[in-house]
Length: 312
Image (tube, rainbow, N blue to C red; front, side, top):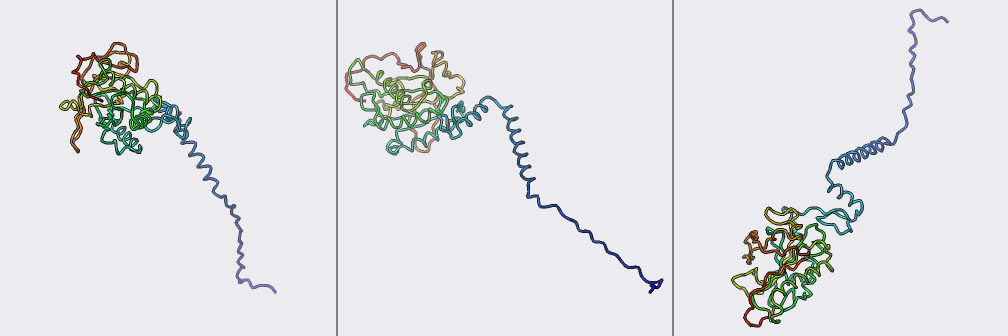
């Protein structure tokens, strides 16, 4: 049957099915991470190319010994690389580090009042002060006690990590030595300083070239001049020198070659608790010509003391 002419045309709807791509799983993130890592490595290489030799050696030494089991640790570079400079501005940190290291000694509580650390014009001065019973050295001879051995070895383990050179000094009080005229306070002070040097190098781990000088002063630099027989005048001083010496003070090379005169420190008197310790000004002393390192810098002997008998 024919449709009427005025009938509506049928509506035809065509639906298309769109197939989406499968899930990619975030593979682009892996590629982007690789790209960022490569860029970071590139910038590190560019930075290293513009750094000085010390930084390059520090990075090199880390990759040679990442665990830091080598001798140069702490404030020095790990492994076999060159040590980091410990200059004048770092001495306060070094003093704190040595104090913490000494606190690990079991008997340190008994000897802490006999150990003083002072920043002076020469460097960081570590002084081991004797008492009447002989805290660090046996009375009348240059043999260190067990406390002295333990403390000197512990100090040497920390100082050996530094590039700084050290000076070792021996001091006595004004009492004449009772061992006879052939052996005086001059020999005793120098022998004690050299005994400390030997112990720190052989047992403690100081480098062979780290000791610039060994000095024996007898009673010429009393710590308490008003009480010349006080036991604290008998002491061993270990001075960790600045790498960049202050103006007017000799360098380690000059000391070793005998050029220049090494400064000595003014006597340090005990300050009341809470009072700030002032930095001592050095006074020049005569230096023997071309001494080998280490050197016993013995000054000319004084006139024979009165025959009073006393032990050190």
